[in-house]
Length: 335
Image 1 (cartoon, one colour):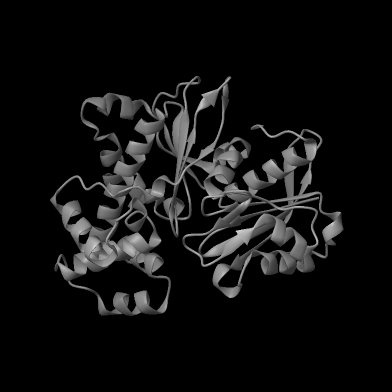
Image 2: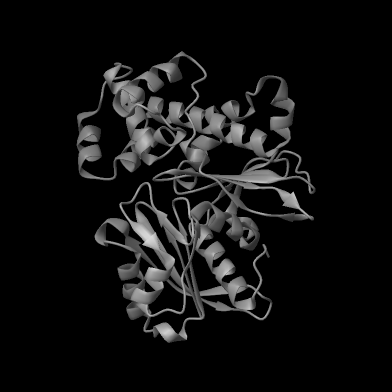
C-alpha cells in the first residue's frame, strides 16, 4: 500500500493507493483535511492512517506534494506556517520513509494518468508531439512547472516561478502594481494570480471607485471564503466583482503565455490548481485567451499552443502516488 497526498495552503488531500499489475496506481480511499486545523503534516498523516485503519508498517511508501521549494527532503511552505521534514514526519508516524516533492512536480506527474474527461480544452491549437509542455496552477498560491521533452519523454521540472516579479502591461495593471507595492513592497505574480490575489484586485478596484460595492457581498467576503465570494458574485453579474475577475483573468492569461514562451510549450500548456475549474466558463470568454495570445510577433505561435484545464482535483495526489510507486520499484524517472 502507498500513502500519497497534496499539501496546500488551504487544504490537504491524502489518499491510500494500491499498485495495479500494469505499473499504475489505484486509489482505495481519500480524505481532505483543513490545513488550518493542524500544526503540521505528521498529525494529518496519523489522523488519516487511523481513519482508514492501516498500520504504519503496512505502508510501502509515502510521498507528498508540498507547496514550496524542497531541499534535502524538507521545506518551509510559503502559504502555510509549517516546516516539514520528510524524515521527521516518517519517524513521528512510524513509516519507513516519507518523500517530499514540489506540489507542481506532483501535479505534472499526475497528468499522464488523467482520463480525457479530466481535461477541459480552452484552445485546441496544433500540438507538437515532439515539443515541450508547461504547467501553471493558481489556488491559494501560484505554482509553475516546466516539462521539457528529454529522450521522447516529458520530464517535470519544479520551479518557484510564481514568485517572480509581476510585470504590468497597461495602465490598469500599473495602477494595481502601485497599490500592491504600497502594501507588500515586492509584488510577485502570486500576489495577483491566486485566490488572495483576486481579493486584492477586488479591493483595489473598490478603492478606485470602479463600481459600487454590494453591501451583501462585502459581508460575505468577511464571513466566508473571500475569493469564492468574489467569483460567485461575478457569475451573478455584480459589476465590481466582474471587473475584478476580468482583470484577474487578463493577468492570468498573460502569465500563462509568458510561461508557455519560456518553456516553448508547443505540446501544451496545462492549467492546474483550484481556481481554473471554478471559472472555466469565464476562461473561455475572452480576457484569459486574449492575453495569452497577445505576445506581439509571436501571436501565431501562441495560437498553436494547446491550452487545457485539469479538472480532476486529485491530480497532484495521484502524481505523488505515482512517484511513491516508482520509489518502491527502484526507479526514479518519469513513467
